[in-house]
Every structure is written in structure tokens, then in C-alpha cells.
Amino acid sequence: MTSGWRYRFASVSGAVVLTAVAVTVANYPAIQDAFAMVPFLGRPAPTVLSNGELTFALLTMLAAVFVTVWPLFKPQPRRTLDTIFLTEKRLGVALLGMAALGYFDYTFRLPRSTLLLTAAALSALLPVWMVAIRRRPSQQSRAVLVGDDTEAMRDLLEATDLPVIGYVAPPSPYQREGAPSRGMADGGRLEQTSAFGEMSRLGGLSRLEEVLVEEDVDTVLVAFAESDRAEFFGALDTCHEYGVSVLAHRAHANHVLTQGIKDSEELVEIDLEPWDWLDHVAKRAFDVAFAGGGLLVLSPVIAVIAVALKLDSPGPVLYSQERTAEFGDTFTISKFRSMVPDAESETGVKLSEEDAGGVDPRVTRVGKVLRRTHLDEIPQLWSILMGDMSVVGPRPERPELDADIERGVEDWPSRWFVKPGLTGLAQINDATGHEPDRKLRYDLEYIRKQSFWFDVKIVIRQVWQVLGDVVATIRSRSSE
Image (tube, rainbow, N blue to C red):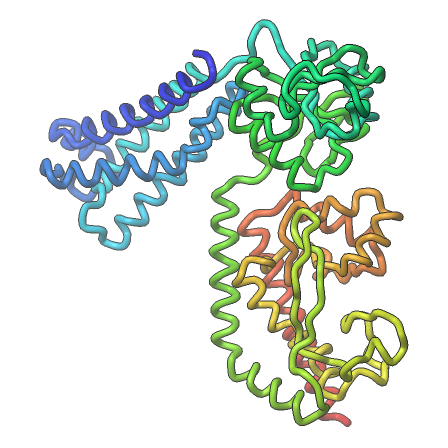
């Protein structure tokens, strides 16, 4: 089966038909009676749904399967075992969701016996179907260069044996000023510079989707100077949508997006599905629940802190500052003010509140307590609720500090692949921006391992540390 709409139709229709057949057959009285004879699993007594109940339960099951198996409907070339494992994983999520509906006494839930029979049938049949129709590499490969880094493009051309039919890139770095055009300005085939011989420019990045379809491309060679920007991820998303493999030169590849790079490999494949969308949904749900619950529970504490800050020193309650967000963008972060107003103007040095040590005279009395107990971070729960931050992720830095560190730490922008966090693996291991190499190692380890349960473990450790700091602060204040 080829890629494109024929694959999509076959995958969707196959999943629908197999699910419908599995549920319908499992509901037959004879099948239910036979299943009742199975020790333990056959109890309680089997239940045969009526036509109305069966229809509604079937539609619910189809919806659960369709939503969870959605990534398999894209014509992404996969190995046989990868296809099987991914299908089983997605089915497990769908069946777990159906079981949860039954646990909460859903009116038209699938009976336990029908659900188990359906699970067994789909686990055996759906992976076979997905393997049978999966997209296979074409016999004659067609590749294009995509990016804006001429050096990386040269390295790719020297390392690959694939027939490269052209390149897709912004025009400015590659087109000679005043060079004649053999077509339209945007998307026409433009004369290439001598660096790439007579290779044609197939258009700008906005035409990548059209190029993949019109030129029947099955491999993209990416050569972006900065692999942490939206243009890079937009190109990857387009390739994933159309089932196109993506290769990069190992000298220019970002290790966050590649796995198992060997010294003998010049070209490495970029993982187009590094993070499961279900993990993203769970992470966002956790963020909203944590931030919303935290603001609600801590509302009396917030009021007390606001009053204490006003009584302790004049000035605003909150301190705001620009920080680096996902993909190198910026956002405004807020904290409870722990320093005197205009502390930076007194010295002429642009200083973050978290840069000021506890002995700094500009730190207020209340500010010292807030910093020691980490209560000054509470307003960031609002940034989490608004989606600018996550509970767990690399700690956001000031843009100017990021720029300074980036000059000395080459992979520093790799931290921007995910949302910044209130806490993170680096924070619970006491790695700060003063040790950028060590902090980066922890941040990249988190990006590779991130999952819902990994976030929960980090949050538990952070809360435990905060409680310890609060207790230590109370003891030190009481002893004074």
C-alpha cells in the first residue's frame, strides 16, 4: 500500500471495521457463554447488550480507539516491530479508558467480558493490519535539502548517496543578488550558487508541503543553523505529516532529537515522534491541576505575604522580568518582591532578584524569609496556569544571560525544546546557572526522559526540599 490518502483511508477504515467486528462478535450470546467457562476471567456472569446499548457502547469504543490510534493514521514509514509496539501501546490506552468508564458506572459501558474479548481480538488483529499496510520506502528514493545552513548542506551532499533533486530554503543565503529566475519569485526554481552546482531551489519554507507532494519526496536532509527555532520544528512537523524520513549530518545534529549516534555514521535519522502527545496532554492536565490547586490552597498565604511586603518596605508586591521561553521566545515572569524597589538602579547593574544573595543589603527582611522558603516563587503558578511555563522543566533564564552562556556552552539552546519549569531535574540537584555545563546536563537528561511519572517524582522531591527549607527557616528564626 502506498502512502498518502490511500494509506490514511486504509488505516482508518481498517481500525473502524476491526473494532466494530470485535465488539459485535464479543457481544454474541454463544461467545459470552463460552467465555464464562474461563476460570476467574469469566466471572461475573456475562452480559449481552441490547441493540441500543450495543450501538452506543460501540460508538464509544470507536471514539476511544480513533483518538488514541490517531498517530498511526499518518503514513510515517516504520519498522515492523515499531509498528506492532506502537499499536499495542495505543490500544492499551484506549482499553484503559474504556475500563475507567466502566469503573465509574458509565450507563452504556462495555461489560467486563465484552471488553476483555474485544481487547484480545484487537490486540491480535489491529497490529497485523497496520503492519500489512504500513508505508515502505520506495525503490527509487528522492531527497531534498531543507534548511538555511550552507556548511551543513555541503556536508550532507558529501555524505549522502541519495539523489538530491533540489533544496528548499529562504532565498537570501543562497540566491545571488540579481540572479535570473526560471519561475515565480516564491516557489519557482532559482539558479543555485556555485557552492551547490546547478541544483535548483524548489521554493521557500512555506512551499515545503507542496514540494513533498509534487516531487514525490521520501527523504528530507535538514540543514538548519539553529535547531531550536519554530522554522525547524515546522519543517519536522510537515515531514511527519507526509511520512517523509528526515536525516541530518551527525556534525550538525542535535542529540536531543536523535538516538544512538555511532561514530561511524555520518547521517543520522531524526526522531519525528520524540514525545508522545498523550504525555503532553497528561503533563498539561497536571500543570493546570497543580497550579490551580496551589493558587487556591495558598490564597491565604498569598494575602499574608502581600500585607507583609507592604508593611516591610514601600514598593510593589510583585517583581516582573523577561525570561526565555520555549523555542527562544520570551515571556514575563513574576515573583514576590524580595528586594528594595529600584535595586538595580542603585548599582547600575542589571540584577535579577534571584541573583542577590541573602547578605545583600538590598534584600528586605521579608524578602530573606521568602527566598529561604521559596515562597517568592508562588506567583509563577499563574504563568503555569496560563501556559507560559510548566511545573517541571528547565528553569528559565534572562535572555541576556542566555546569550552570554550560549557563547560558552554550545548546546545551551537545546534547553528550549520544552517549556521552562518552576522546578526541574537541575533544581533538585542544586545545579544553577552559575554552573551552566552541569545544569545543561541535567536539563537535557530531563528532556530525554520526560514523562508524567518523571514529573511527579521531581515535584515530590522538590516539595520535600521546600518543606525542609521552611522547617529550617522556622527553627533559625525561633532560635534568634
